[in-house]
Image (cartoon, rainbow over all chains, first blue to last red; front, top):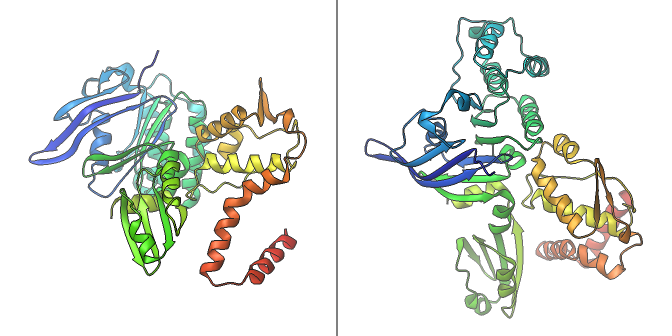
Length: 292
Length: 124
């Protein structure tokens, strides 16, 4: 049986005249860790909120475990965990009370896990929420989303306020929960290096559209920087149809190429008098190049 | 046992492939040598476990590694003796090419490059 954790087809969303999500189609399955990248205003938060049913699509369809996201039965909601960008903690409660409040909603709340993580992350459960720092609030929100061991975990900028150490602990824990293969994780972050470690799939959102979606590995293999060296005549004969950004200087030409392949490499190398060197790019650079 | 750099442009699974191939070719990883489990590698490096499984599966398909039920993966037996020199040189060729190109761009002489290599070699 092949049940998708999330399935969207031709999904779109407009707020008034402003089209925020345009015609997105995708599937996410158990074991996937999807990293969502995009500039501010690209539509990341809206996309995640559509998944959680917080907002109604303007067109198309989005389903979570086969149910329309705006109409999820309780049993399905109990399988979803969410860390919002702005936490929804109750100021007047203590950490312990907030934890037990959320725990009471879920039959499969994992008390042991929460106790362990609170200790590892140095969360003082007696503290009042209003006295917590931004980073501590974020850690607590993450705990609240992990506690019922969700099959689908959606995280919107979960680490923006965490220090590097806490971020690493968070990542290690994400790895731990994704090693059993049964869970799907979707997270947006501006910290590209975290996405580069954790995600096996990448979505690059650009003005509400998926500019790129696929394996991180294929992305890295298909967007590269090519360095060419040769005489002006030899370089003039070279054609680079999918070059994103080209720079020329004397006998050099440098271009970032999309949809790169070994065949393309061979074709280029066959140009007489041209030396070809291929430079792989880190995810951050790929992201920047795709936005130039 | 691996040096993994997630921020490099080379996908993590490729970094693992290259390193295992090199270590097996040189005999550094002998037949029967055990590899760290997927979970172990994923947690120590905080990287996606599927990436590591992918590398291991490809190495298994190549015949370099063997899967053992409930036990760590091991280096397969046909790789007992050292791979011929030519093949090992072939594996390092792209890296050498890059280095030489960079040296030329920096207008270093051959002797200067060789000297730099020798210094590193002796440090290791």
